[in-house]
Image 1: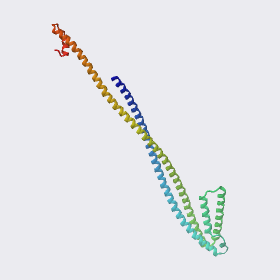
Image 2 (image 1 turned 45 degrees about the horizontal axis):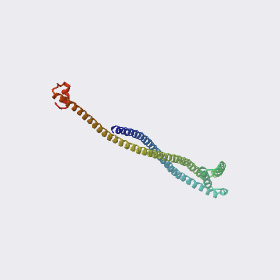
Image 3 (image 1 turned 30 degrees about the vertical axis):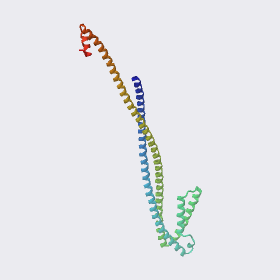
Image 4 (image 1 turned 180 degrees about the vertical axis):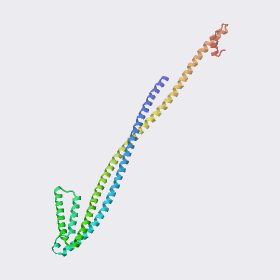
Length: 287
């Protein structure tokens, strides 16, 4: 029976080692997944921070576009007022009044330039548009040259040109700010896309971490159960060994007693006792 229990203990001990090793492997896997998850979460925060920074830059650029457009429009409005005054002068002075007004020409040029900047078109269409703008500018220049003969009109023309120049410079800044806004917007969108992808990977790593941790906990519980069973076996084995030892001692004591009784009978019969005989009688508590 003792040997049978010892064999069973060996099996449980082997199972215990297997559960411990599997638990350690799963804990290592869980640590790896947790580290990967944390790295991905940190990367996600970096992407979100970068996206937020570009969002702020985009919004600032859009605010610049609105501000610069408003300033440009004020200059264009002032220039248009001057051109309208010049057109009134033209109407009052002979055949110049039959031509299209300078304000109208400038509005047409502005509209065509805006169309060129904002609309996608074929090469031929764009060339046609550029030629039209060039023709309108030539018409405007001819009218300006005719009108410059009048001193007052010349002053108005110079002032209107200066306003147009300032408006054109502001328009370039508007275009630059709009391009920057689009650039920052594209970077922001890409960062958010990367953040979503990184967050998804982090969620997957966390899911694997939880699965590995739960499996490791299950293996640990099995290991603890095996350890308890081993302790129970040790108690039983210890008890059996103690009982076996006690039985062995009892048998030895009986044998010693029997032998001592024989020696004692010899002693009572008058035979001499040796030293060993005396020790034997003392062990058997007959002396």
